Length: 155
Image 1 (spheres, helix red, strand yellow):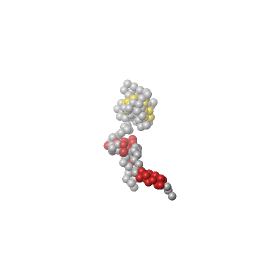
Image 2 (cartoon, one colour):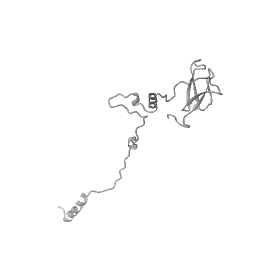
Image 3 (tube, helix red, strand yellow):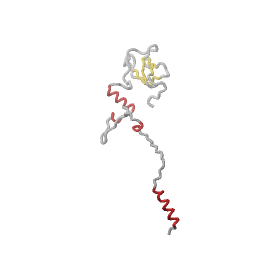
Image 4 (cartoon, one colour):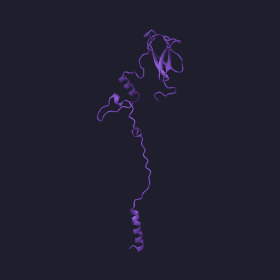
């Protein structure tokens, strides 16, 4: 059996063990969700996706530049300016045909002057040369850069 001293030691230690041990712990939460970090609404560049059990439309699932183009088409805006150049005159070195671009390079299709006088010839215009000439008709193009200097475009 237990001795008297051992029994007293156990009884005196028992109430101490029943008391809760309070320790100050620091709890740090980590979140990586944009919903938690920001209360701002989701930008229009992200689609809302389809409801469960439905097949999403192009507008619902498109994101990024594709969604920007689709939203522009709904508003009747050609976001990437893909229409033909207005050729009212033949471009010369003194008065070239201006090509607007948001990137450092743009490809232009020349059909000649007067229009449709030769098959389409693709000409790569860029910032490195001041003038770009069509080898068939001699039409001169000059690129006017509208983008951000040193920008990375879509990269």
